[in-house]
Image (cartoon, rainbow, N blue to C red; front, side):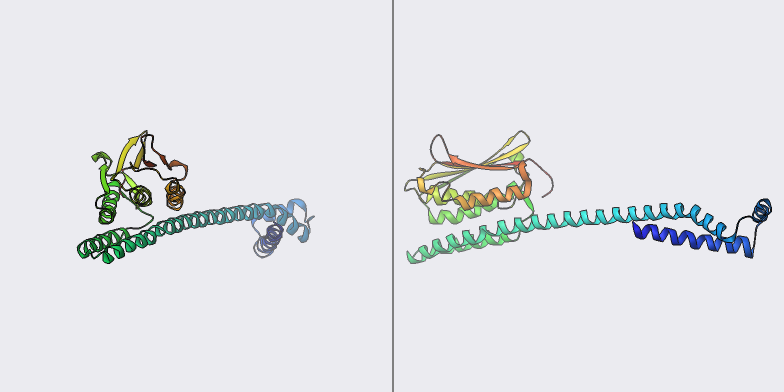
Length: 288
């Protein structure tokens, strides 16, 4: 502000000097001559310059204030855009980090299973598992971790995963998928079901000696889509939410980063036995 006031003072004084020199000395106008004749030359050059400077000071001060205000507003908008860009970049980085936590975990389990098949001298099952594993990773890694995919595509990825697990548990794993056709185009975060399905396999099918049915369902509910992953295996105390806490926390963190409070993930034992995990998402059918 001090610089603005000083600048306006200097500009008004300079303008007043130039104005006096041009219109009172070099080329006086008829109005100037009449003014000089009227006051009888009572005003000295210094008084004329100072009077003009005072009059023009407020003009220059107003323009300086307007210039500063516009500059401040522009800088504020630029800072706001930079903050929004940084927030979006941080959100995308968080989603990518959470997504990439999934694949190494699953790959570790799959390679252990593949090793077991080789040690048991089951080359056909091992070959089938390698092909399924290749298809799963080729498809899943080709998708952008911060983009949404149609629910039908997410279900297709889970079928690939379950085909791999069916090699591990040929007699124990039974799969049912119940997704209405009108919900197949609903947009969901890619691989959002993977940790929940994997948790159901590890703590439902793998922990049981009897056949276990794994059910994936989708339902529309009050402007949202409800995704359910259920199994009817016996709930083992040490294989419940504590054993799958990392996987379930991963899903919750991804949902929070993507949708905030508009989405949620819950889990717990079913009243009829077994385990249920549920995801509630905003129901959108936009291109994804």
